[in-house]
Image (cartoon, rainbow, N blue to C red):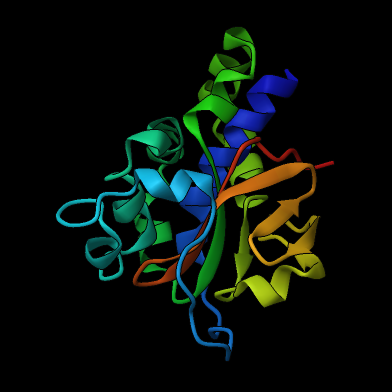
Length: 185
């Protein structure tokens, strides 16, 4: 069941992110950072230039490392909600993060729209957060729970998840790709 909740959280975070709006962080965006950023194409579909003009759910759909999350967002019916949000931050689990959840648990969460939504909204916070906003912070999620962010430079964690590619701008969100599915308490 924990695996299912984790998977649902990832999906929910992506889908619910579009449902909220907030003002952007006053700090200027820096270049994305982290080891997984090297897999982002330098031009064309999925490149930083291309996704900067796309709403978050659409941008995520161009990244093959986020296909499980995209599937979850679709199952939860949150694509339009995410895409219409004004300013959010999404902590997006990778396919490997979802794969760490037992298949039976993941399938169960994906089939339970309420549980999936709870988990996904736990991955979304209001406002476009810069890395400096994650240095030592308690962030309130759209689900209502709290996330603990820590780090500096190019080394950040959110709860126990490591940021593997962070500060990725989309038209309406800042995305931090993480290596674990976050679970609400």
